[in-house]
Image 1 (cartoon, rainbow, N blue to C red):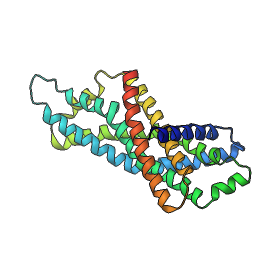
Image 2: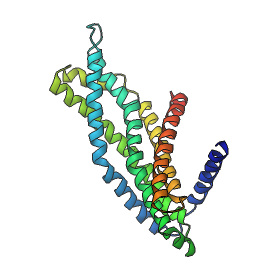
Image 3: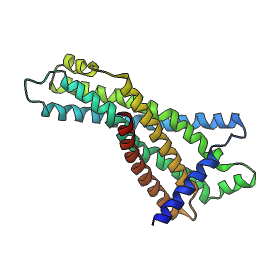
Image 4: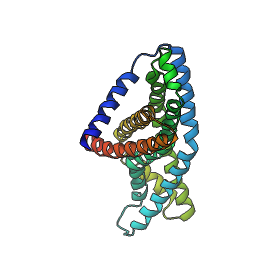
Length: 247
């Protein structure tokens, strides 16, 4: 078991070495990069916004139910919602969502090209297939995912604001006062660092499992499941490590 894990880790780093080579033609690389950014960003925007609004609403209601003492300042609700959404919920939960949305798509796309021998055809033509197919996806993910997380934070806080207006658990003024209280720019840096690391894990692990499969549709399905499980596990572990280091 340990030997198998070590072999997979070794294959993963050799795969990354093959991926991070200079593209043969910069124009083709940038064209594929723009296409990947459009596919990843626009394709995930709706589901990210819906999930963020729901998270903001739920955390607002749950936090309001826990605040019963009159001694607690009224701005505590907004402050708690902002801290929870910005520091943990959006960067981690949305990244796990993107594992299933973007990660599975990347694994299926590259895996299907391996099954249909399109990757072998690229290798025969002297093209570095790993760099040609995977590098634009990784770079696009590093650019798009932080933008999606920032958008999700905005919609989560807006979801909490709408919930306050509809339920009246506190006044809108106190909620906004809490959102702006004790704000630290370092928190945004912390979120962006986590998001970039998570984006790299999602794109590289998903591409790796799609690139290395052998066989047909059955193996493609197994690779898809394995990539989601491994990427999710790494995101949760790295979330703990980054939090320990930066906070």
